[in-house]
Picture (cartoon, rainbow, N blue to C red):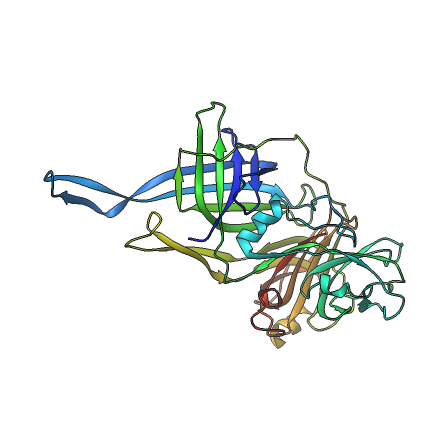
Length: 403
């Protein structure tokens, strides 16, 4: 099996989670889980329930694969580090978890705008710094909003130090304006890396680990009407044990999750166009639709009959309620749309979720929108056919950037 990422630490009342980077140092980093986490260890009995033990001529059970489920919810926030030109990016615990559930992750230093070549749909980075940025990632630009605030957009393509934007800025950047980079998790079907969790109770002997974790995520409260946006993790383990060996326990600093600004921008526009098209909505749900499969194996070298793990399906879907518009025409014509949900304008505590290409999947029905009638759109993502087919980031049907 692929190398294990060291994940998690839970107290027995399932209120805290710790995470660690993918390395062998067992250095744990905390994630405060704002919904009580649950864990269910168990062990299946192999379908061949009984066998003949020839030396003793006594029948016995054959134990099968150990299983364990670990679920918890974490606020979707930035890591508090604004990725400017001087920053040194390093994935935090939440980014590691997102990367393991979607498959891939990338980050980079930020930059500043060059003196020339900047428009509302194009950015020219400082000389030689365009390589820090990738297409299909979100960025934040200094002072381009109508009120002088920062704006979030995403890059559709980049050549050398010049990037083309998928969502136009309100105003062009000027020389020296900061361009903040971010941490982006994206879908990668070739991913096989797994995680490892450590669960600790009040008693010093009440410790066990879950190994070979892979799983799925769901997104909650994206509009932040009452609660902050959150990521619900649902992990499945290939094995578990009560022997922790030399794995060190986590430490807690008591820090609260960073908050995000209340302002949310939702852009829904025709794919391939850059005109800013802000929409109002009373309901938005997005399911990344990533499915991991643990492949069963028999024979030498298997790990509790689990030979490997891999992503077997990526099918992002969602729905939203919008003001009345002619979305029926888009549905009937099969018009591809682009969706970007951006929260916050403060570097280090903002995020963006982008579906580069989506299609409305059913006749938009009327629905209540507070005191108005609206359209209920149901959609699914299309994989982009642009860019290098070997580049998972370019072909990712959804990506999440923390800015």
